[in-house]
Amino acid sequence: MGVKGVEAWRSRAVGVACCLALLGAGACSSGYEHSARARIQVDRPESLADHAVRVRVSGLHPQEEVTVTAGSVDHQGVRWTGQAVVTADDAGKVDLNRARIRSGTYHGVDGMGLFWSMRPQQKDAGKTAFFPKAPEQQASFKVTLAVKAGGKQIATRSLTRTWMSKGTTYQALSGARNGVYGALYLPPPHSPRRTPVLSIGGSEGGTSNRFAAALLASHGHPVLALCYFGCPGRPESLANIKLEYFATAARFLDREYGTGTRKPAAIGLSRGTEAAQLLGHAYPGLVSDLVLYAPSQSTTPGYPHGVAWTRNDKPVDLTPIPLDHATGSVLAIAGDDDQLWPSADDARSIGSDPARPGRQREGLVYKNAGHNIGWYPYSPTVRYAKNPISNRYMDLGGTAAGNARAQADGWPRVLRLLGG
Image (cartoon, rainbow, N blue to C red; front, top):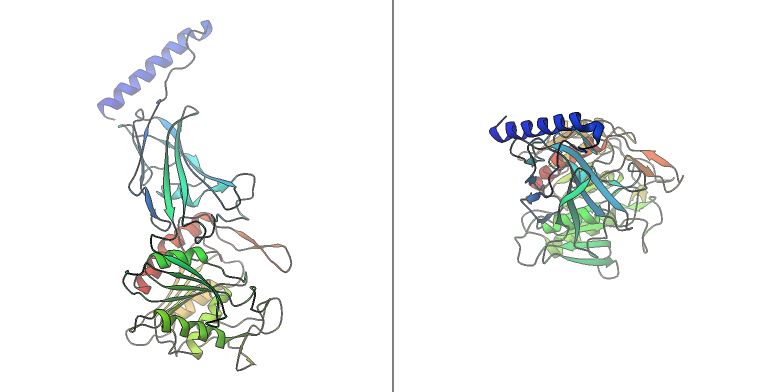
């Protein structure tokens, strides 16, 4: 304990002695005064939503216990809050990259714990995820940091977390001119040309993964978040989806935004991993690298029934899906607690397959992570998802902390594979 710490300890001891001596007379109500103000320091006040920020607090009393919170509002106007009760060091400072919290919405030491552990007010945190307004409607969102001491707020600071960096653009694709449906996110016009990405969502249907697509575009990648069912102009359910449709989307990306040296990459999530692998198998010259989140190595039935995939109007049923024709690297990412299907075993199997010379096959399996392992880090995830057919919640497995660790480690690997 430093000199300041010793002095603070002595001051507190004298105050407590005063209280004990005069308590009966009511002459002393508190043996210790909390700080009246503090300062919040952040290394990145404005940053992409997938960038970590370092949060530090100064101006506190040595060894003072304070509560640090992070709050934001989702697209429905619901307030989300993360909380950490921490103790200042002998210099009256708190560094969340180093501080072990005493209690809060996460455990241990985690500099971004306040962000991914945010919980919604008056809602079940396990059944709803944090989504601000769509990136094309609101390019960034605010997170407010606050510090409380003795029940009083003594500091506050606002951060900007960005989905679409300056110059990044959005375009809706209706199929009229290019034959594909979805959302197209393009990097700033003068940024370096990087690998285009075809983003394929899962059984939720519609145009999903918009936030991840916007982030990838901000990193320099033209991204097509493809709708293959569940939107106007496409089938209503995941049944009899033509592989030719995915080939059309890949050709569109290559023709309009290709680098000339690398074909578009395909990123699939859950059921979308089947489509990504089938695309790499049936049309090996159209796509390069494959990223597979919570993968299935086999084709599974249509949803809710029938055949999922066709080629030349014939059912495609492959177990396992061959990847020997894949021309690029393959990265499979899964959690060891996936409760929907055995994606961990399939990720390991995919990663163990031999790759072409100069290419890689890797299967990453993360402890305590579930089916909801995909995409960018530092945002709250869910444990349960509502099945649109049965209207019941499905257990996705994993913990919030497990998913957060998996995303924080896996997302940078995806960016490196894509070259961005």
